[in-house]
Image 1 (tube, rainbow, N blue to C red):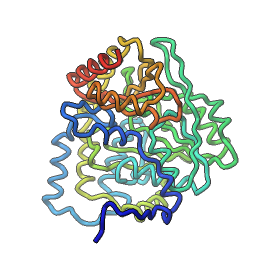
Image 2: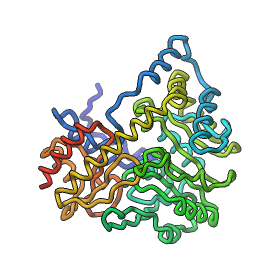
Image 3: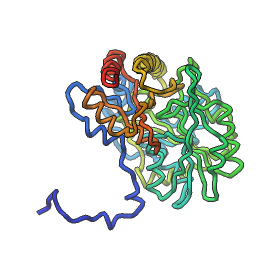
Length: 398
């Protein structure tokens, strides 16, 4: 008989790299507040809109005609061609399908990229605050994350997070092999300028480092631009840059788990081999839905972006009224990262706000090791929910 309450502990037999995988601080609050009646969940990095019908219908058509067999590990040719068309239009360049490989979401693309760039014992630089999966993904392969704190200017409307290039350069050591750059950033909303990207690229070239670029929020920018600056704007074809991408954010497809890795064509076979031994490819019917998203989803993406802009105004204006909250308005993505002055324990505060405001936020401890209490709020939701959530938070914080 097998009991869930067995007293033996087998973790001592598990490889250290697996044990090093950190528990998600976001998940801890999610578990604490899950299922509470009336709770407004702003803790996860997703909106409240379901995948649009034109995408799901493409998937069901694929299922109806029996596209349920094994797929090429790189993705079906139609998928890779669709990504190339989309990227060529977005960046006003010509991209070959050979640069793109289908993955199980952006997380899988990140895993493949890190396995291509890093070995056990190698160091990689991560500007922080940062999405915790960058750290965890490196740790499970035995690589060592090096935290590089972002700079923050807070002079009213012109305040912004910024990448301190001197601090980043000082963090490069003999074991450094890669730099992870996420712009627009989760959680801060920092959006790299072209000059910042050029400086990172120059540093990587000088030391022979890989850049792992997460630009999945590239179209979520708050200044009215068509997209954020990208390494695509400044790189040469043979620069050592691996791009991770996902369908989750732009097209409301978080639960689909489909994305892509972009790399130099000479690296595609290596990436394909890593996909073979991790997932062996992505279902054809999912790829058909993704193709529909790429080819016909422009208006939906624009709608999402406009909702996010409105949501940003609601939460920023509301929380500023408390007099207790410190933040700079995000330049991109769909998060507000704010500090609650006079507090230290962000996990305790996040749980307290579940109890007192019935609103779920992500604790800053998930994104940074700082002792100051920061919280992340996702504003990719309808205005009515955000107005109510903000009012609850204002009452609880005031």
